[in-house]
Each structure stands twice: as structure tokens, then as C-alpha cells.
Image 1: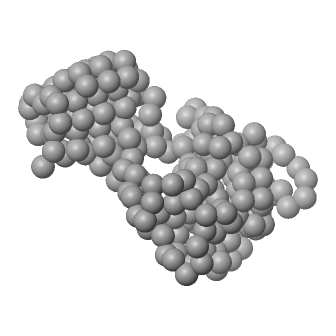
Image 2 (image 1 turned 135 degrees about the vertical axis):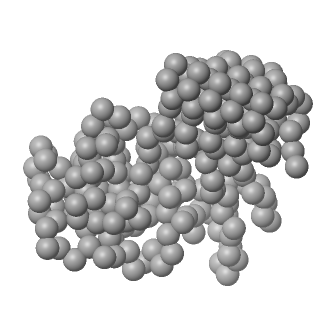
Length: 233
């Protein structure tokens, strides 16, 4: 699990894509350590009271088993999946899909599809990554990073986790184009990426490609290409 500050940033990034926030309601599922941290962030940073908490083991105020959702009006609800345990993650998502549409699910720790025998640090990333093929090798220091748009300023109030209007740098009347990750990267089969290479989120790496050590990739890499330095359009 990420620390609370990182979790707050994840929630901020997900909420940035939701229109008419004031009309939406949120359900936390399940309610373990991450679920409790999500509740705290919703309540304290966003001023949002969750509609329900769903958990099969926990009991308490406003905590219900998943069957409680049957016949409930959930059309304006988003379900926050507060789980990073990949052993039970699929089951949790499948359970909630019996009651809501997939677009209503907010996945803070979505699973990344990884092919056979691929290894290296990129296999442990998920926020900017959609899938990795088989037989890929990633050297130490390789990373996929999101784009940080600069609008008015690069100061943190533009990417402040939680309700940014509470930040002391907030200026009423100015609409901020909030920096966020819009796309994820797909990596093909039999890809080799050298030490300290950086890939910008949304740039895809084709089958059999080689990315040299220290390269910065800002555009798609075709199948079987060899790139180094600064790869861009």
C-alpha cells in the first residue's frame, strides 16, 4: 500500500476525471487499512461523507455486506476499490460488478497484465502502465512517469491532493487545468529497456524493441526499433 500522501494523490487524480462532483456519491469497498485511509481522505480533505462502506468482515456504523446493495439506487454512485492485494482483487471487482457498471468503479490500484518471464522494476509499477508482454527485461532505474502540465505555474497548488480550492495558493475565479495521467503505456513482447530509461506515460513500446540506457521516450517506439537518447515525434 502507498503511504497516505501518495494515496491522497491517487484519489485526487481519479476525482479529476469526474464531472459534477457535488452530485455524486461514493461507496468504499472493502474496509481494511486502505479503506480506512480512503475514508479519512474523503472526509477531511474533500469534505465528502461516504454513502456506504461495504465489507464482508467488518461491522460498525454505515458498514454493510455487499448484498446490502441489492435493489439500492446506485446510478449516481462511484465505488472506490480500496484494495491492493492482487490475490483477491479480481474477486472484489467481480463481486461489485453485480451491482454497478464498470465505469462506476474507481480503481486506485488497478491490476497490470504482465506476460510470462518478464522481470525488472517496471513490473512493479501500475499507475502509468496498462500491460507488459512476455520475455521483457527492464534494468534498474527504469520508470514510466506521468506528464506534468504547466499552467500559470508549476507550483504544487495545481496538483494539490484533495480539494485544491482549500490550498492557500487558490485564486478564486481561475479554472486550473490540473496535471494528471490520461493515458497508460503498453509494452510488447521481448522488449529490453536499459538502466535509468524514462518513458512518458501513454507512449507504447513495440515488440522486440530496445530502449538504451538513459533514454527519454516521449513517443511510441515501433516494433523491433532500437532507440537511445531522446525519442520524440
